[in-house]
Length: 455
Ligand SMILES: Cc1cc2nc3c(=O)[nH]c(=O)nc-3n(C[C@H](O)[C@H](O)[C@H](O)COP(=O)(O)OP(=O)(O)OC[C@H]3O[C@@H](n4cnc5c(N)ncnc54)[C@H](O)[C@@H]3O)c2cc1C
Image (cartoon, rainbow, N blue to C red):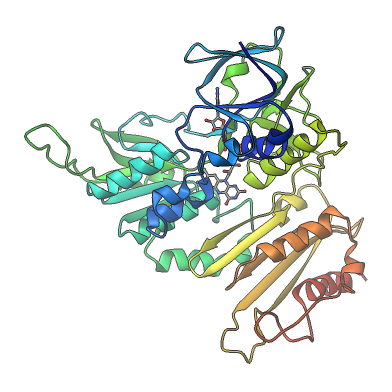
């Protein structure tokens, strides 16, 4: 039996990060079933045709160059008492320390008709290749359910290929966990202008059809029809499939393997402490398979993002080499692109903040370059502050240029608890191509508006 200092279950960003750091100095094994690890975030852009599918596949060298053994297999059982794992192919491996990074699986809600052909979720290389092959075979309609960042990116990509595209969400506006409604009006309009049928405040209640999905029934009586299925050719091969329904409604932790084990599991995943330790000695968990808290509210919080999974794994890898780092929790800085708008948010939305704190908000709107420059585009920032502590709870940015640097700046202010009255003195830079006039900056202007209200 092969014995590892560190054995990692998983092949996503959390597992790869851990192996890259811990691999060179220890005997590390990593077990994952897929042929390729994926750059999930880039998958919509392969559908759109901006990237080849191959560009979304990660090289195995990421782990083998770190000196780790890559084992292509699926773990089917873990024996925590004897420190071994067993795989689908019947292999048994021993470990000194076990890292669980089994990630998440997209949720397929338990509604009638989800087992019909043409209904799917969107995460794996197989999902990506299925969509690409259906496009080639002449699919002509698609319904994307869920208007979070993944759903919005996917719907735009499919729409771009010429498909009749519907985007359905029960929320009153798109990306509801990232931004508040008033910042999204232009972006939503951009989706509609691009030809996407937006069904907000609608819930999919049932799917019907023969063997293939043909009708998508929404609450409030509306039905989206895909039309009859195309004829089969003589050899029985289906030439064209009228439609696809793709659910992008969130992720649940992939922890079925541990259902009847002594591992402590919460609603959102494996329970870990700030050092990524589980309740079992020498067993750790990182990434989407874990349950963790918001760094702002201290409540158990959703945080299924690569930008949470990777820092968790990095922290654990450092701690396994003797560091004493602690994970603060989720801030959930994230971003997407909607039409020509780059949008992003961090911390709590105003809606989420209001239900927990007495809040005050401030806005600033300038341009991405000096307004006299031909490249200048509008950029708007919103800050949400806790009235009592004067600390930031969240912030959002909409711009004609990428926003992640601005979103991260707001996260830093939240993370290091900079009171809003100090943010008004924030020192910034300016240049005609890259910022508004030296006369002002988004962060100081939005903070100033809040300070004025607070008195
Ligand atoms: C389309 C898409 C776009 C996204 N865009 C972004 C983005 O822009 N920004 C962002 O921050 N996040 C984004 N995400 C989310 C991000 O990809 C996830 O948060 C991240 O992949 C989580 O990493 P992980 O390593 O914890 O788990 P995963 O990436 O889910 O990896 C889990 C791994 O464990 C393996 N595994 C599971 N069970 C077993 C078993 N029994 N034996 C062996 N191996 C097993 C799986 O096969 C997989 O390799 C996106 C996700 C998708 C699907």
